[in-house]
Image (cartoon, rainbow, N blue to C red):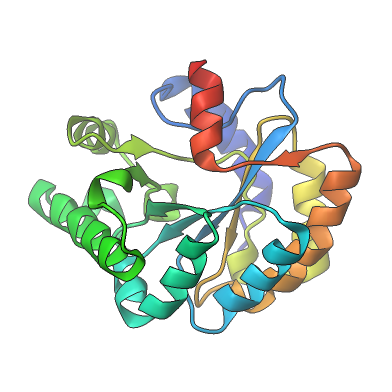
Length: 225
């Protein structure tokens, strides 16, 4: 399987200035960074990951698929009860530009409802959206803003879902991380097998380098302060 990991930093540099209304990175002068996890929750991988985050008392942000929330509501509740930040990744892992306007809105609303029911929170409080595969068009962003969602992207993508090996993923993150970085990992079916071990390797090394972990919501607040 072809790996695109070396291209992601270049893609980021091209897209970030072109689409400034997305959150690509936090404050470049602050040591605050965000660990984010896509494609969950998963009945096995997410609790393993939570145990590591609990151990280090690290806040993280999760972008969930509605179908997985409905499948594992008790896992979703576990994440929410620890005050991690929760966002939307669509109901199923469909690329947003391939959906009609009505389908996209329904996918996001259905996911909001699934999370609200599983976690006993208000659907209006779940408004951060990360497009699956990072695919979007200007029209996608226009619709998200129109519907009062906040588009969240990334700055560090180690491509863990193709399973290049834990050491490779860790090395890619440590090479690319900077102040304000948004790191994307996966706790779902693809990539989740290694996520707890990967994070257990990463966190102490990043702490040693002086980074501090915050949620996506904190990064939004920083750049708008």
